Length: 144
Image (tube, rainbow, N blue to C red; front, side):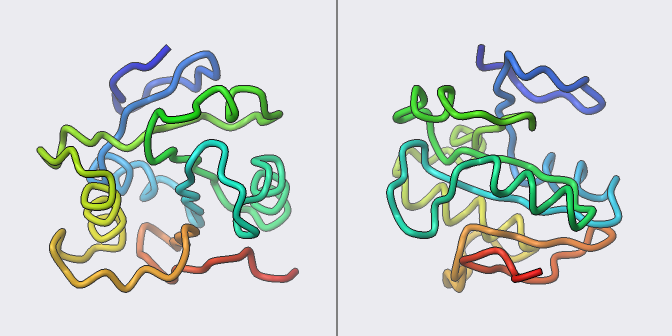
């Protein structure tokens, strides 16, 4: 079920693509507006909504949505959800780092165009892009 990401690969909801921030930024550039939601499966925080909430918002606001899991932990929770988008998971091997906090921070930094080791200024797990350029990072979806 978990396979390496390949550019121009068709959507396959029966697979989870392992992706690094360089590959993801390349994909984001293909769309006028993109939203990346990084999440932990089974998250119970008030900031973790069901996946369909992000899909509905993205569709209404003309954003291409990228659902990126931070790990395989509690994968069953995500697979039980109702969603139509492709699932991705962070490629922790890309960073040669096994500590969860480190590789997630590295991924989020590089996704925003920052140096991997930059001081973490990420405030949320929603990353907005326009024409391939990082615009903002939020904790919650903007009100419509």
